[in-house]
View 1 (tube, rainbow, N blue to C red):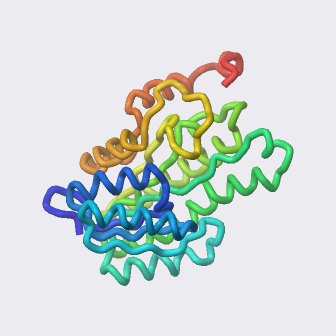
View 2: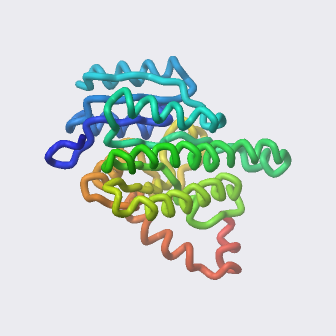
Length: 253
């Protein structure tokens, strides 16, 4: 159950090796987060993240196997975690793949893999989580979307479309939870300096994982349903969304 100040005391992190997820866990442990379940495919990476959480004060840290591409396993995993811990205050959906746009345009299977992980996998596990949050009557489902999903660009429309689908899905899921005591938080980072973007030229307003974590925590504390990282991207993307299509194409982004 959240503490008296509204800070989560327990969390399930789907994509527990993500640098943004790890930064968020560190920030929340510095507040009141004590029980953490880290889920993902890289068991060695999960164990390193777990040791990090324990070292800074988390008292119960577990790791579980999770594969976004195996939707038949999602509901049983979520149900078991919630049952074992008597409920979860925060679920963070932090997994995803960037993919290779050029390769994806030539290989539909590669494009489908990106969409399957980023959208289908997130939607599947999100529904399972929402059912548990609705039943317990409280909690937040926070999902990492992307500003890339706010308007598809020529340079990354495969990744962008997967995030656009995810973003729309979780907004609707959030609406379905109104009145239940639970809510959805959609977080839209811009360019984040992580392993996923290593070697790429940084876009304007680039941030570090710690910056995204700070945005997530502020949004949780404020009871927000949407957040941008950095916050100024909210207004930048509002302008980008409304650019006439011929002008948008000339930007060559």
